[in-house]
Amino acid sequence: MGYMPAITLGQTCVMPVIGMGTAAYPPADVETAKNAIVEAIRAGYRHFDTAFAYRSEQPLGEAIAEALRLGLIKSRDELFITTKLWCSFGHRDQVVPAIKLSLQNLQLEYVDLYLIHWPIRLTQHINSTPVPKDHIVPMDIKSVWEGMEECQKLGFTKAIGVSNFSCRKLDELLSVAQIPPAVNQVEMNPLWNQKQLREFCKEKGIHVTAYSPLGANGTKWGDNRIVECDVLDEIAKARGKTTAQVSLRWVYEQGVSIVTKSFNKQRMRENLGIFDWSLTEEESNKINQLPQRKGVTMTSILGPHDLVLEIDAEI
Image (cartoon, rainbow, N blue to C red; front, side, top):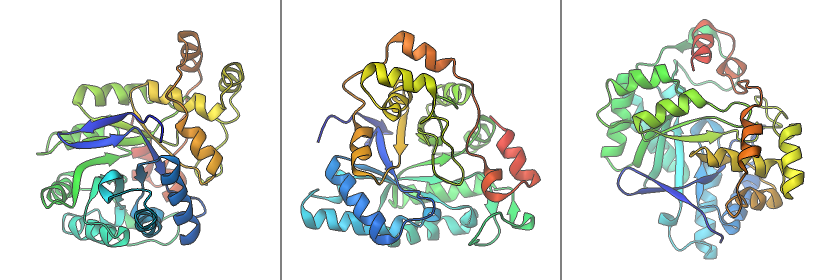
């Protein structure tokens, strides 16, 4: 396994800066996902990002068991596992039962990081999107965060954090939190650089993790803006790298960690090959001047409801 930088969350929680995402669209069958994750462990990935909503907790759990059986890892402690509280469990009394359900799916005693998936609550479980308007209500961040803190105190997770939280939502959370969020996982790539949010998080001591660093091409919510970006392609050709590697290197150089998803063996390995070179100042400046547009919106997934549109508009 090659060199993999890591960052420390809190006192003891060490997170490799590149994780493998498991959100496939359409969802992969259990065996396909499991085999891809085993291959990723073989390639050198030690950080895996899942969520109840992705339906990938079970295959990840099976892959971890298989990797242990094959001797690819000696213990579960060699891995960093992130999962997320889905919106339909966004109530104080449902948070601890939700993480217990995730742990059961994963066949694990604890996860390393537990995140609130979206700052919104669904009043019932959903099997398809868009979601009826009357199923979407504001999340009581204070009480739900109390549940997240309880998960950490009970030892079900080493660290807690959030995903898709704006500066405004983070401010609201920080005003009531006993344990501040360790991480905010958000969409970030050269075409949606999250500069303002990153600066806010840095000031507050919250680490940023980037998802969709390659634009989530091929998904319901993503597009090909990154992989077909002329500026990135030009830099890649000049450096003998792939466009994806240039994008990932730029994201890494902003001081954030990355969750990147590929079930392709070659691309898995390519995505790890960003640590033995760096972008020049001129290349970085070119990337920094790219036009900005948010790619992933709650509206595209849940529907154009007033509360969803309001959250999407926040920075």
